[in-house]
Image 1 (spheres, one colour):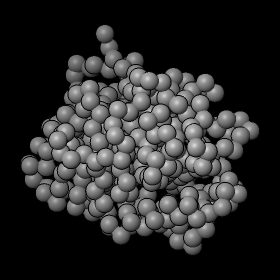
Image 2 (spheres, helix red, strand yellow):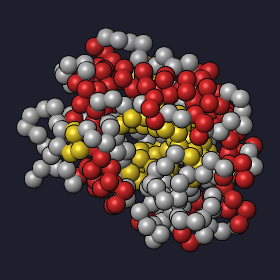
Image 3 (cartoon, helix red, strand yellow):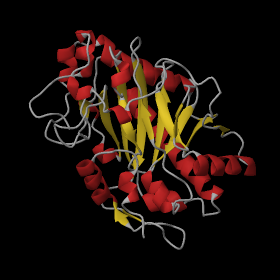
Length: 342
């Protein structure tokens, strides 16, 4: 959450020349990558799956991707690529073209974790936590009872409409993907979606300003997402990494693709056959980076349990899981590991 009473944003620290101590990662969590490089295919890459193939092939590809990576790109996904581009353009414009006092008029509630609006300290459990080199804007978009566009920026006359259209398109794609993923396991097509229930969807735009000492920081620390499935788009800068077989793999941006990240409740529902993806974001010294993550999660009162037997995870009410996550912080997959049955 935001530190009580503060309005510091990472973007305002760019010209300082040195990273403030609260953003310096411990040695064991710092990146070893030459910041700014791309994955040149000397290391493995997450699969790219063409959703226009609706036969057995796509189910087989999804099964491998979900069991081996927990993350993959999709192309021919049905979301207009013009909408992806407009969402990126307007998001960047908010951070780079609006004055700070204008942005702060949409500031998050500093007393509430993960509240809607403009912030820098999402899900920070205490003032001792190392901070991410990131600013963000979080939109509450679904169910419609949570959607209040008056809380979203209106510096551009079509910003709110683009976010609403993007929300609806991502919702439809998330439902389609969970249907295909269920079929890839031999389960009824509605199995995973029914287990998650009505989506609670948030759209979080993350802005990673240039960092004067990128070797000391992370844009977003290592974690797996809490809910069902996350759909992410990046700009062309790059910086997303996923953990594969104990090694960090850089995910090259694909402008017309959407990156799919399985989250913890899907791992529980599939009884561990499909894994939630541990991922993080690294920083660089030269260019700001932008990504848009759309989270599709259960409601707080939904109890999630394995759909396959014998169960490897205990059932959990999603609100309790979220509360535990807030208390402990992210740090890889330690939250879902706590659900494992001995």
